[in-house]
Structures are given as C-alpha cells and as structure tokens.
Length: 277
Image (cartoon, rainbow, N blue to C red; front, side, top):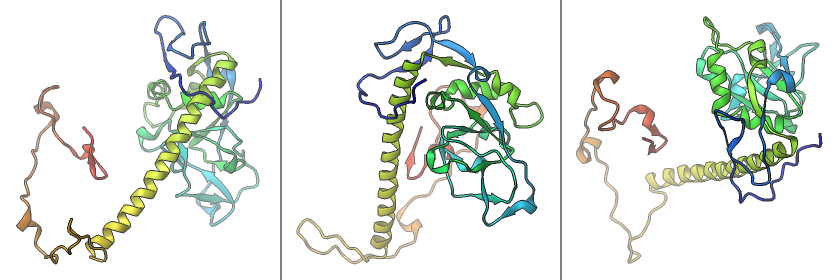
C-alpha cells in the first residue's frame, strides 16, 4: 500500500460517511468512487499493543514520558500533565499509532483517543491506555472519533469497572473502503482538521489579547473617547446591587417538565461568556 498523502488538493466536494443500514454504501461520497465498502474487525487490519504497568516508586522528574488519559484532550495530544518513569523495557508508541483510553474512573472518558504524530514518536504509555497499530490509521483515526466508535465502546463497557478489554476492542467492526478511497477521505478530513486547529490557535490568541485589554480597561489604564474626541466622565464605584436586579432560578426535577415547551437554562448551557441551548 502506498503511503498517505497528507495534503488535500480539492476540498470542494463534501463527503458524508454515514452508512446505509442495508448495504455498506455511504449515503454521500466522492463522485469518482462506487461500490460497497467492506466491514472488517479491527483485529483483521491491525493490532492491539498494551501499555506499561508501573508503581509510584518508579515515577520521577525525568525519564520515559508515559502517556495517560490526561494527555488526550479533544482528540489531540496534550502535555500539560505529564508523568515520567524509570523502566528498563517498555513498548514505545510509533508514528500514526492511535492512543486509546480503555480504563478510567470516569465512564465518559473511556474511548477518548488521539493519533501519535512524529514529534512524540517513541514515548511510552500507561496500562490504562491501549495502542491500536495499523498501516490504515491515517484513515481509521477519523473513524475512531466518530459516533459509531463510541457506540461500540459503550456497548462493551465492563459491568463492574469502567473499561473495555482488548478482546472486545478487536471485534469492533469498521466500514472499510478500498485504499484509494481511504486516502481521499483521509486527505480531506485531515485538511479540515488542520484548518480547525489554525482557527483554534487564532481564537486562543484573541482571547489572550482580550483578557489583557480588559484588565487595562477596568484598571483605567486605557480610556476611550466619545464621537467628538472628548474624554468620557470619570468612572464611579458602585455596589452591584445598585445597578442590577439579581433573581434566583427555579429548583426543579427533570420529571417536572415535558419533553417540549419552555427551555430552561442550566449550568451546562453556559460556556465561557456565551449561552448554548
């Protein structure tokens, strides 16, 4: 199989990868491809690699970086909470491995995953994590982020512990097109991911800039002028109760309300400075 080309030359077509219930044919796909997709078990096209078991005495300030659940955030590798250990032997991650959380105290974290990029090749990973290794991972990484994958995860969670074992993971069935269609899909979705990442970086920079400006504004280090270029009046200090009316919300149970009707704003609807209904 030839290597995947990470660039996407044409992003004008927009594929959709939901599968028909009757046939393994995408509802919408790139126009040059036809025919059924296969369905394969993960065991047929790759392998599972287990992580390192280590004790507190092996943790140190430097040594082998061990990737854990906290190193996977929003489908990407994160390095804000690292652990280093001293071991003689370990299974290092390799480029394009998919790192998966298979055991955790929080059920919602089971299954979260990220692909290993070149920068972090050869680091280790902990026993609560698993590596899925396959030459098809540039395509499969996008399936591992899909609802289809997470449905499989939650169907196979252990009865007494939040985990999925390797034998169950190997049986997960994945829609599997021919190599050239895999490459086109991987190129397209990877290019979209890169655009999203660039926009997120711009958003982070703007948020940092805004926080700095807000601090200066409320410290009155920065003052604006009116439309006639005159200074605004000096600021006053007032208690919050003098300028706003504070009201308490409803205390209710979910069963108190029907499925349709007046929406209720809850803490989960508040994200940053915005509301999400």
